[in-house]
Length: 175
Image (cartoon, rainbow, N blue to C red; front, side):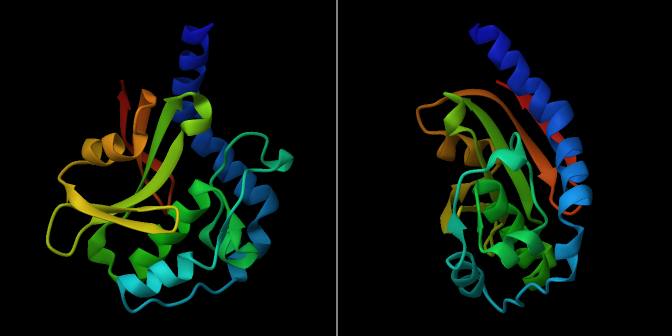
């Protein structure tokens, strides 16, 4: 049974998740595209904006995990880790496009530990990441370092790196 679940998690992350997210955005979230995002002038502004969002689990209309528009997250002021990550990426892109934010998702076992963060180029080099509303600063040199940091003791099944604007996969890795 464990192998079947791992197979499904890899299939979901590599083939289905972003297609479903784009479709779900198109069907249910187009009205939020008119929502204006705040304009940050520093990393501390981004931290403050993210602090205004409440973490919540995906509801039944999400069926399985989907990534909303950042405008949806900002308008509703609640979402799960995907919402925090996409909002952080949009705010980083506005503030400093050279930070090159990406979404990192790790499919973990147990499944409830699977997580998405927003990683970006730190001002002094290396990588930092937003873990929900917390800015994690450290000596992370590659995306795998970030994944290792937030996965903790959970078993890694697979992980990816995604461009936040288009939800195009830049990297996919099996454990």
